[in-house]
Amino acid sequence: MKWGDNDLAIIGGDDREIVLIRELYQRGYSLRVFGFPLEMMPKQVQVCRTVSEAVSGTRVVILPMPGINDNRQLYAKYLPAEVKVEEEDFSGIGHETCVFVGVASQYLKSLAQLFSFHLVEVAEQDLVAIPNSIPTAEGAIQLAMEKLPVTIHGTKVLVIGFGRVAKTLALALKGLGANVTIAARNPAQLAKCRVLKYQEVELNNLAKYIGEADLIYNTVPAPVLGEKILNQVKKDVLIIDLASNPGGTDFSAAANLGVTAILAPGLPGKVAPLTAGKVLARAYPPLIDSWLSRCTDG
Image 1 (cartoon, rainbow, N blue to C red):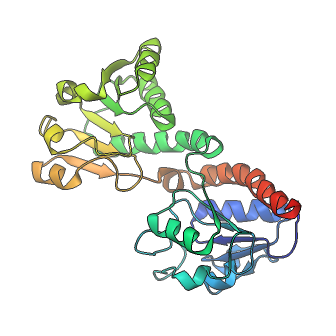
Image 2 (tube, rainbow, N blue to C red; image 1 turned 45 degrees about the horizontal axis):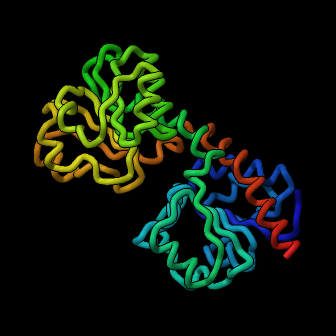
Image 3 (cartoon, rainbow, N blue to C red; image 1 turned 90 degrees about the horizontal axis):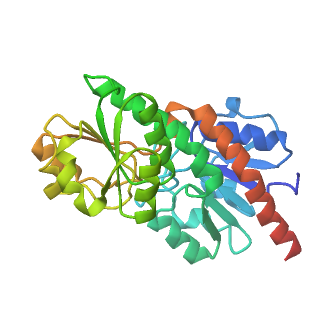
């Protein structure tokens, strides 16, 4: 559906956003973009030289999944140098603009408050989170295969959390023959684990089991693997933290203890950017149309 000139701006990103841009262009949206080479864009897409040029006057701004961090840095794979987004770059939008992002930093939230634009985080919306859990799980297993000297089959794996990513990951690990234990706090989640034939442990009792695990995945975006708990793990354990930055692991303590711990957010864009881009291309049009309809009706 085409609403009018320059209704959408896509700012920064990686191969996922290239898939999204091409899909939105095919659907007839008018687009401005920043952070992508001209030769990679469809002919009718306006490639802008600055963030402010791209977003000024638009009703929809789409930022990459990592968005803009608290150091004001825009995630943009194809830019040759770091770009910082300053307050004045967003001064051309206001209450009639909706800014979509995967996860919003405190800095981006402060911009939304300052300029009164609508801010929507999509990473935890089911249309994005559920299908994205598949490339996340595959990437997490790929990472373990690269780092471990043993097969996944027969390995004792602890998955902390039982949300969307953890469920998909546990299923894939079980299919490979791993011995999977789930650590969760919610009694309903623990009951579901029993039904699905996983071993389960209450998160509060993590210290009693964690020393048995060969491989640990954390999906909880809160401090769950602190120094006290890390003192209980095997010295040759591999910890892969899939939670949003900064993760739920004390990486400094892990390093001091000689424990290998890896922060691995954003795996869909790294291991399966085409698939992850198609996820965004399916999820965004209804969100965009809903906002533009609201603006038109309002």
